[in-house]
Image (cartoon, rainbow, N blue to C red; front, side, top):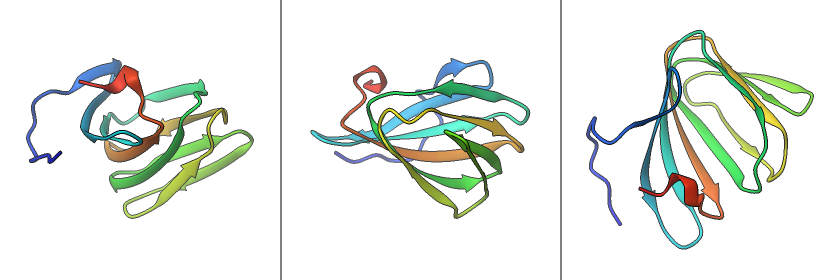
Length: 107
């Protein structure tokens, strides 16, 4: 599967939080998130391991009791079932990979 960059196909997960699945296979799924400054992603958990990378912007990522300020080039890996959320400090673009595949993110 291949993906060619375009601005179509984003869906609003929360107000000010848009996501688009870029590619997926049997074991992983890659999504791009566009986050508006000032938005908060509430604390939540899911069984998927989640690795992420900041393309542009800045966020505070909260994982369990740890807070990490992430900017362009910074990355993370969150274990499945770990409680996490984020505060969006600047308009941001984030790429995240989930394993196993998040069926709720399939196009």
